[in-house]
Image (tube, rainbow, N blue to C red; front, side, top):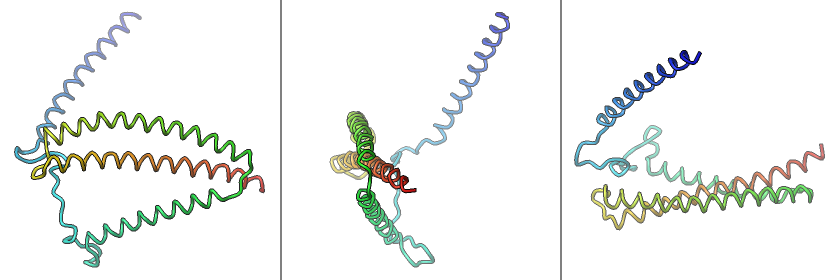
Length: 189
């Protein structure tokens, strides 16, 4: 039995080495195939954005710039809808004991969220160092001053973190409101 098991392990090692060799060759081949021609900026910095005003949609009824502005209006309307739902939920009747449990759950979730936020800010310090190294030294945005682009990139990375944090907080708050109010409404049948 021991010899049989050793034979299977030996065969498995051979297969694993073969798979590793094949993956190495494929990875090196893929990296060469996707390599950027020299002189061109790689990544997002090398993207060529079209003029939004020159692109039309819906049989030339609307240009890209106006369509983008309509999208922003939908975002603002969504924010207003979310705040209206929040206020309605907050003002619904709830039993005192259910509200206390709901608030306890909310406080626990909020503590977790604050801890996660502190960790993300610590992680951001390392990410910011990589951003500064990449966009400031290794591959600055072509034709733009590093002192102009780097603060913008760093600021929007923080805005992204703040947006995610705000959505998480809002979701926790609305769900704890909704759970206690739904449980109370369920008492009525």
